[in-house]
Amino acid sequence: MAHPPRTSGAPAHASVAPLNDADLDRLQDLLAALPAPLEPMDVMALDGYLCGVILQPQVVPPARWQPGVLDVEGRPLPPGHDAAELMALVGRRHAELQRAIDARDWFDPWIYPDDEAAVSDSVLPWVAGFAAALDSFPALQAMEDPELVEPLALIYLHFDAEDLEDAEPLQAVIETIEPPADLAEAVQDLVRAVMLIADVTRPRTKAPPRRPAARPGGRAVRTPAKPRR
Image (cartoon, rainbow, N blue to C red):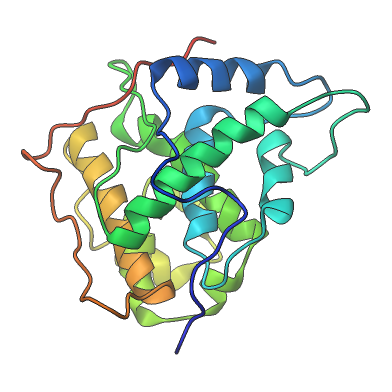
């Protein structure tokens, strides 16, 4: 199936700088400062959500996906609240992820180690954000392409089995997958899954896909500093 050239309302050109640790702190502060009753995503869920948005078979306009960042129910901002700075930071991360996914290059997911948590618990916020995007924008799952089952299973295996009761084909594949041994392996599997999904939903036409089988230098995970709460 042919797909149109990718365009996006978020800046995607090379001059858009990736977020540094200070930017990430600021983004988390701005999300946390959104007034009640809004329930915004945290930065880990946001990162997974943006990947789920970018992987859709057709471009999702920013006006459709941005409300989900600010509130899980998509409620509008109250009058007088300015989210321009927040959304500018989100747009920069969207652009960074889109460049990596389009080029099939490695990216560092916003996942933070927790020595006291199980591996799946550490990645679950990112996975939940990804799942929220697929629930909001069902075109990806509606493709029903068998090539999507394995990479989706690599992501959704971090959910409890009872949360996947309506996804029997996915459960069957998950049962055949050996869980990641540590967080580094789990992160690598998530990035690999994103690239495999992109091969189906947004195939490259000018060059064969180049999937990151491993992060350069092995499985080591480099994550930004954990944002302040």
